[in-house]
Length: 379
Ligand SMILES: *[C@@H]1O[C@H](CO)[C@@H](O)[C@H](O)[C@H]1NC(C)=O
Image (cartoon, rainbow, N blue to C red; front, side, top):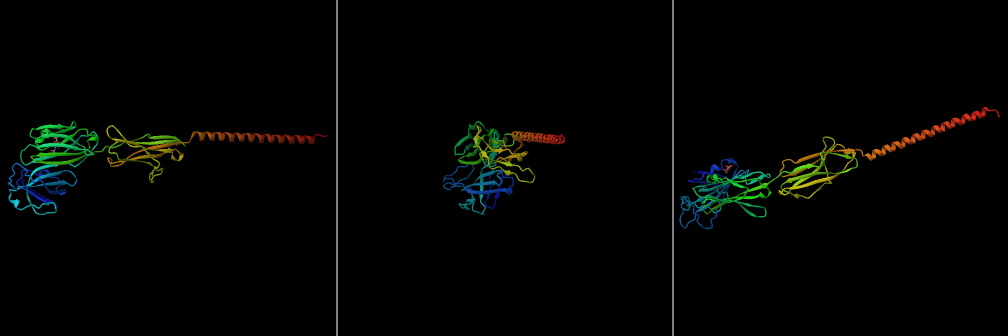
């Protein structure tokens, strides 16, 4: 199989190789980034079946990396220029990655292809970490999957011994497709992932003495659940009430919550509530986080019918989550009573005043009648 891979950075050409490189890089050929670098063999000859080597003369080994610019896949090819080949006269410069436009004839002998280098998953989902390999001859391939967690702790997830065709170690939530391994499929399936499964997974392929590890990063991202302590809040003027927004079961740690006072008229912008208090983050047993954001609302009649919105942002969300509640404010009963009393007192005063007025009037009339009678009576 002949193949040519040209890019602005590098150009390499493989000949007489039984590796079908192009089969692994057939997608979006205009979106590939290619890099070639020397693979240092520590001054030892790598014994590779089928490779003609000259004594006292080392083969030149290279790794060519083809990366999809949108991170769909990464392919690494091990390339060798045999010391016995004709082209070996045309010595390859030490630094091949510096925009060299010369063409070198190299054989691709081993290839490892992984899927996206960063995978995000929610909690309790199954995640497939894709890893495939291809070797130019029929051989036993040893496979290992190793997880490196935050803080550097390394953990073996899976180990397969190629010559014994046996699984030597398997983590309880890891699954491999054993029937697929001879076909070059080393993908790992993780069942019901949790927060502690996050980290960098390394797919290690060992053929002869050549070991290649390609990394896939698994990030756990879980959306928060947002709840308010009421949907409608009925308050009496003057009451103080805590408006609580609970943001729960999200991952990772960074989430932000804000309270907004919605405008009463249309076309106005919501008003940020500034006197908001946030509780500290609690960690749940599944590793996710929760917290609440609240403020004290002093009910006034002006706020009757007003909506308050809790807005939550987190990296798991394309758009913020918004939850609203409506506040209903009624006049306070004590004020009503005060009005009633005032009315009764006023009414009472009026009655008393009218009564006195009436009394005064009758007294006056009485007196005039009396005096006129006195006038009429002859002394
Ligand atoms: C490997 O096998 C699994 C199960 O059949 C399949 O889902 C996956 O796509 C295969 N991966 C590769 C890289 O071929």
